[in-house]
Image (cartoon, rainbow, N blue to C red; front, side, top):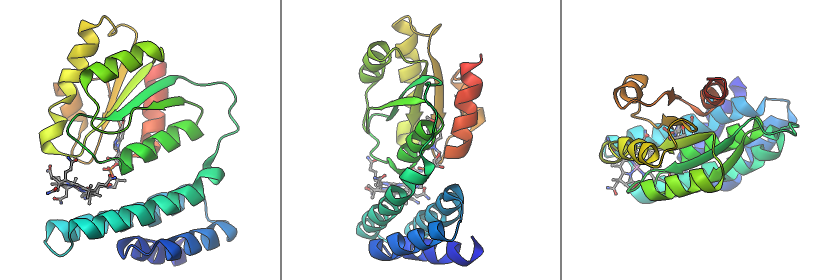
Length: 212
Ligand code: B1M
C-alpha cells in the first residue's frame, strides 16, 4: 500500500477524479486490500485538504471538487468491499443531523455497515428528530446512527435521543453517534451508548450494540 497511499491522497487533495479512479484501480489490481485504500489513501487526502482549509490555504470549491474525487474512488471500492453475508445482522437507520450537510463520513459508515451484513436505511443529511423517529418506527430499527461534523449541530444529537425516548423507542433502539468532533465522553454525557471514531470501528460498535 505504501507506494499507492501518497499518490491516492494527492489525487484526492487536488480533486483529480480521473487520477483517483486510475490509481485506485491499479492498487486493487496489485492486491492492495480495499480497506487500506480507503483508510490510508482516500481519507487522508480529504483530511489534508481540511487542514489547508483551516489554515486558509484552501476554499470551499476545492473541497467540493475533492469530495467528488473521493466519492469516485469509493465507488470503485464498493464491489470489492461487498459482503457475502445473507442474513442481516441488524437494521440501522442512519443520517446526518439537522443543520448539517456533511455526508462523506456518514456514507463511509453506511458502506462499511452494509458490507458487514447490516441493513441500512440512509436518511441523508439535515435530518430532523421527527424524521429519525418515524424512520426508526417504519424500518423497525435496532440502531439509530447519527453523524455530525459541526460544533453547532452536534448539540442536536441529544434532541434526537430525547425524541426517541419520548416516542417510547428507548427500550428497543440503540443509538450510535460519530463525526470528527464527537468523542466517547460526549456520547456518555448525553446518555448515548454507542460511539465510533471511524467507519471500521463503527462495525464493531454496531455489533457490540446488537449484543446488549
Ligand atoms: Co465543512 N467543516 N463546512 N464542508 N468540512 C469541517 C467539518 C470543518 C472542521 C472545516 C474547518 O473549519 N477546518 C468546519 C467545522 C468547524 C466546527 O464546527 N468546529 C467546517 C465548516 C465550518 C463548514 C461550513 C460552515 C463552511 C461554510 O459554509 N463557511 C459549511 C457547513 C455546511 C453545513 O453542513 N450546514 C461546510 C461545508 C462543507 C462542504 C459542503 C464544502 C464539504 C462537505 C461535503 C460533503 O460532506 N458532501 C465540507 C467538508 C468536506 C469538510 C472537511 C474538509 C472534511 C470533512 C470530511 O468529509 N472528512 C472538514 C474538515 C475536517 O474534518 N478536517 C470540514 C472525511 C470523513 C471521512 O471524516 O466526516 O469525520 P468524518 O467521518 C469519519 C468519522 O468521524 C466517523 O467515521 C467516518 C469515516 O471514518 N463517523 C462516524 C462519521 N460519522 C459517523 C457516524 C457513526 C460512527 C462514526 O455512527 C453513526
